Image (spheres, rainbow, N blue to C red):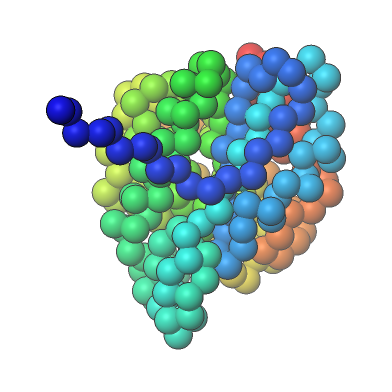
Length: 227
């Protein structure tokens, strides 16, 4: 008798659907020490068009020891080994989180959403993961949204041709003292050198998201999800 197939294990998530039928998806990763609840209240504020059925998926990161926090166990997409300017991170863990994000994309496709209608978004640590996840993914996506983050795997990532023309928007706070704006500027330069044409907006805020930024996020999501 054939061995029973093991059921696929996915990250735990929160899901919010704006309207039926769902034709588009946004997979949005939170930052260090947070959870999928971190951005769920932003969905109604985005005020997306009523005729746009969007499934927002907010995964929860696993709890792991984090070196820079004295080994404290907390929700994290990967370990941060040192708070150097460019960050010293556990790349294997980051890639494992990117692979788990790929699994969520594949699940959305299985549920009937075309990959070209799926956006990856991430704040801080989550942004570093979706840089890797989106740009290495083998099917074309709708867009990549980066909030207050950095491109941790720029020197080792394998860019997939399927997403060579991916729309990318980077948002960042001018007064961010957790992830300095210089890291966002470096990511923009690195992306340009890789052949991408990222958009950029900054705000007079720290490591957070502001009301004007939410308006700009909504406008960008409308554009990439309705194109």
